[in-house]
Length: 461
Image (tube, rainbow, N blue to C red):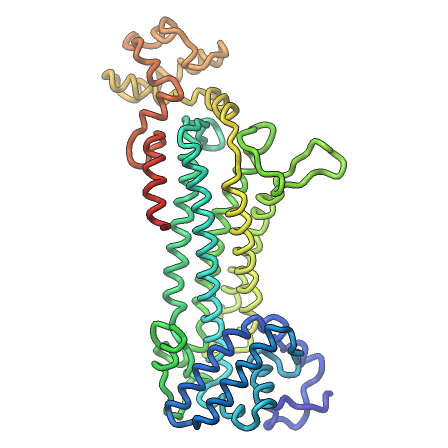
């Protein structure tokens, strides 16, 4: 057994904590990244204690000066973190007391580590959401630039990964943009529920001291204090909600990654990724592997796992705080780190993608992608849609047999399937005619893509 007791709570204990238990229960190895927000919260709490008559002006000055010095030392890597002191809160408080004496011991008046850590995480996650939003906006800007350059680049649109109808590459990229719009909205909505202050809820029941929770909430930029002390210290909904939003972002990036991987393959040959986002093979000199999209696709499982971890962590936990909640930080921290890295990679990579227009166009010509256009043409001529569907199906079967696309058939060949077909049919059977005909809000017509880009730029301005 260790001979030392934790100086912050050791009075109750007759012997020190076992060395293994001290290491097993400590969180300082990972929660020290909260140092800036822990100090921020402590300064606000100290000012409130002074305003409430609990700290003198001299004590407040000593505490603020001591915390500022500790912050400087941490940022200059001059702090030796102690496992015996368990976590970031007790490490900072012990150093403060060492520096300024008894005034440091008064800082913890009217609060607990339970509300302290809940406050720290909310402050930290609020800042991280703002940083993630910047990367999302940067990614969106790159998508818009690429979509604008490719508003008239024709490619096949797919369902079931089979050629369906021609679309423009710009239109496809704007679908990605819409995913990111929803992702940003979800994060901002999540941020609203993060931005409430648990500080002052203390261990679980509040405190007998005359504290001012409205003051500390305002000092820390929160919208308001939390309303129930039990819920304040045991709630981790906000972390779960963030991880759910993060899992959706990663799911979207994974879908995009899959398409990028497909499109860079020799079988598709639709795009070229910058060399700096790819790697080669140790034995096959011709290879250019899309490692960044593949790795992002793989990291999606990691973030999904963190969401499940947090949901499982909170399952069956009684109110209020339990030591289980120490396990909330590593999944949350890694989710944030992974999101930021993946979004940075995409934001850096997307604007530099080169579309291989000829390959895309040739692929769109295969697979009878204008078959629906022919069916719609016959409907406009007065034929019921189900009849037109059957007529076009027969024409496609003939095209497969003759190895001819619909646009390559002569008028005489097409008339075999319906006498209502006239020369104007070729206006809709060309790829250009097909995409141009879908000229409405949300359609793939080049003009609509450019309008969509213009509207989107106003959304992220």
